[in-house]
Image (cartoon, rainbow, N blue to C red):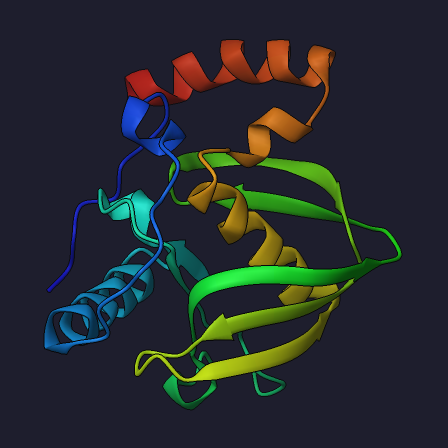
Length: 170
């Protein structure tokens, strides 16, 4: 089922998400709905809070070398914790919760991540470049933050003005 994606300035997007404690059919169904929603909205990542559920769950499905977003590559990341960051990368980010707006954001280039899968099994992941950027972007959502908070004062003023125009058109 495709869920409604909350958009800025919805106050729920600024809530801190709670740890997932039950790894059950309800969670699995919700993760499946998140995937359908992300694909329908043409995204590469989605955090649970973006569809109104304040739990520490996110999904990422990058496009592969053949330019295909293959579900076999889907990452379901529950209760993530970054244990190491290294380097710096600037990447132009967008967000399903901030439609039609893109801006350069500086993040760690390489990260080490601990998380659980949909069954509660502990996993680790070394991520770099775009995957590291996506994980950090989605984890920001879990902590009640949007990428527009990282773009600097003057760009943020410009964003506020431009976004009001975009919202009127949507």
